[in-house]
Length: 406
Ligand SMILES: *Cc1c(COP(=O)(O)O)cnc(C)c1O
Image (cartoon, rainbow, N blue to C red):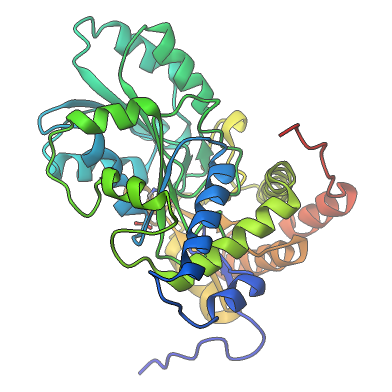
């Protein structure tokens, strides 16, 4: 019989790419007493978090907050803008893109999945040129939406969303651009307005450093116009009543009050540090972790350095090594959780998260757990990833980049 002996001593190393470690400041905020969700105090909190989330999405347009996981935000984006039978282009970059496609099919959408052929599909970001080609061939404008994942959490590739916008414009195509930045938001640069995204989906438990339980839609005028004509039945997810009530800081249904305290605190942290600083910090952490993986002589799941994720790194195992067996050793021996391989790459790789409440030393410790676990599993390593990461972190001081003008 196995006992569930969590966190026997010290602290657990939660190195999965979401849920991510939650800062103590945020946990403390969450534990404040629950208040009347129709009272005056609540209205002020509601207005604050809605305004904060506009800053985080870098938008001046409405942001919807749902008491739901990221999957709810996926569904909300589709049911508010589309009608059953609509032709939708889904770009497959990995497991999350594939799951979103599955959800779209269940809603009665006619999806067309595109992407690179074979295993390469899950090792790259979105190829905007392929989207442009496809849209140019759609002279009838039958495609109603282009769906892409910004930070593909199953592989560690962060696609260039500005390039996708340019591709849609270059094709002169009216399709909506729907972007899943559920794991990217709050950790990787994301600009809803500047990139001309129609609906952006965010989640709480990854880059936003919150527990699971809330998710977001950021809208555009075009998306709101589409929602007036969209034919899929919806009630709980419907934007119209939420937007109306949000004007005074309230919601039609009961919001998850304590998670909104947490959201308010997390937004304060992100905005106090400055988004540019937060993004640069994650890029630096990612580079340090990749230096470690390279020193081991192992392959990084994302094959294109231009789209390496600042949030997580996928580590591919040599032929014949079961990544989940390595993860199990690391968990049992060193109390460190790593992300499992998902979908078609299950067992072939594991994922190291470098997001949430973390720092250089947390990551060096996580890499040391990996290095010990890999050795115990009999994996031949070319060198020490821990030393390489230490070299990187010690020779690259964290810099505070100049803040862009607001
Ligand atoms: C986590 C995640 C989701 C799904 O979110 P849930 O909160 O698990 O419902 C969707 N897309 C991406 C890219 C994710 O990382």
